[in-house]
Image (cartoon, rainbow, N blue to C red; front, side):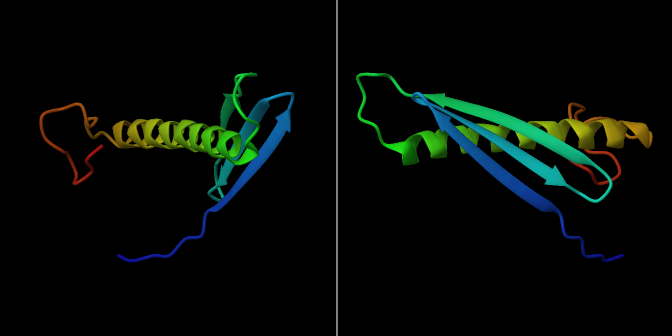
Length: 95
């Protein structure tokens, strides 16, 4: 069984007073997840906005990834399979 999907991801960055915030959204067509991340510049550090962007975006994407994995684990358990914490994968799904 093969299929093709397109999931849309958007990443928003906001910077103010040495703090960069990021919001990452994933729209699967049936579910929307939102991850958040932030980076705080030490006042003694040079002002390099790209570093704050990278840190905040990475943290938002990591948060989003964690939510996606948790959702997948709930779905696997919902179809009667054991979670990835078991000693061997069930139904071919390894979490």
